[in-house]
Image (cartoon, rainbow over all chains, first blue to last red; front, side, top):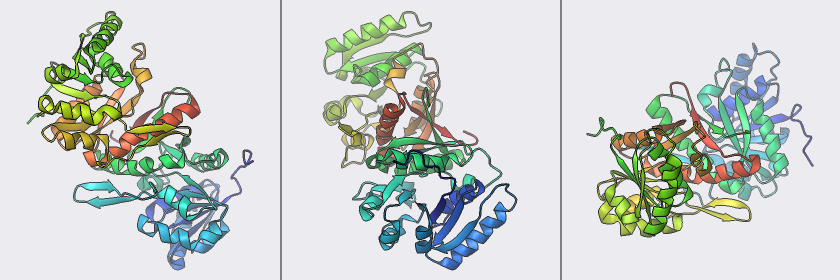
Length: 231
Length: 231
């Protein structure tokens, strides 16, 4: 049904857009020419963050603009919605937006991780993953998991023009996966690959703990690439 | 303590060495000059597999030889032991070898996966991962997780001289991790990176389900690379 959809005229909503991950992806999408509505629980914080991003984007040729809004407004205004809230706000944020997220593609990039003296660890969720939790809360939405393993530090720096990372896109519907792959491919140096069904999202979320461990040991901002002939 | 250990004179034992993963790694280690003892529940099957591998290795310059043996002999004869049994034999195989594996580095590459009509999925283990299960069964051994995401098809073909994949090496002890990184680095095109503590092994094991999904969708033999400045 949606095979021929192009996202060129899409508006992207970012829930939790004042956090590092949401903010970084918003910056990159706007730089690629997509209108973005940055959502937050606190509209004024979202507007302040949007103003900062627009300032950064003012020197980027072909950039669109970012608008700050409350999470509900961001969800309602958007063609596709990224969920980038902290995990402890995940369940409530989505439940509160059940009506406005209905029938939409909801891209979940939330990593359910904890941190202690030994570093990062994975939280054990009844649903298996944040993406599956989102789908359970939002039965009428089309949940896709993606952007779990992307460095917010690299996203935030527009002078980095090759992110050098693949994004595993997880979901049940091929056409929805293809739409999210287009969102990935708008960011320079990123490639979106189908990464399996939603039930295999948990380990992709959790892999972020390994990337954090790698970052600490090797003093880097790690990403992943998938190798293989024909990819 | 072991920082200066080189594995050049090590003998590697491979438990479950007649399976595709154990056999492929045995082939590559022997090709690099390491003596390998291929173990199986059934000594005669191990000897037959070893004979086949030695045939393949006969044209490889500098190759060592592979000896077939029972799993107990393979474990007892080796300086470092790879566990490559099917997951349903994991617990019992290790429990039976508790004495001969004591104090050794035990490298676990077992992926606890199931398959149904929708493809691969991850089994839910009380211990969190096969590697942690191994450490629980073998409290006196030094368990390291590694080689989870390596294509057995590519390993088996000695004409492929660049495996083009990183191996995440997970463990508690830096020196043991370094020994296993040396095992990785003996295989052409592979790079061993510290990937976190053992409690973060589960998602690396489980990621194999995503690679299987990628293999099916893109008709490839997928591997992973970690990107990042300075790596």
